[in-house]
Length: 122
Image (cartoon, rainbow, N blue to C red; front, side, top):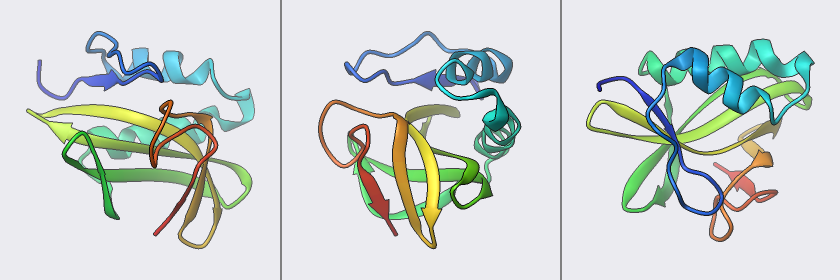
């Protein structure tokens, strides 16, 4: 099952492990079509082990990484995730709004730092 994507839904449940193309469709339903190319690039970074550190943020005991593609406030897509057992667990999605600042506009958890519409500052 290595290198699969699991999306942790806002209610805390997990999707079944999926290939990148399936994750693109799943997450693509949450955004406008003009951001799909940046979603694909962010997912490429997730599965290509190019995630970047997200400061001291943790989720469920795991250090959180992020992958972002696109220009600030212009159809960017930022994914927040952690890796476990060679799989990638996406916990939130939003956009890059300013230098080192992200807004979880598209989806997030019900509570905590990765709550939908929260701002992540690095």
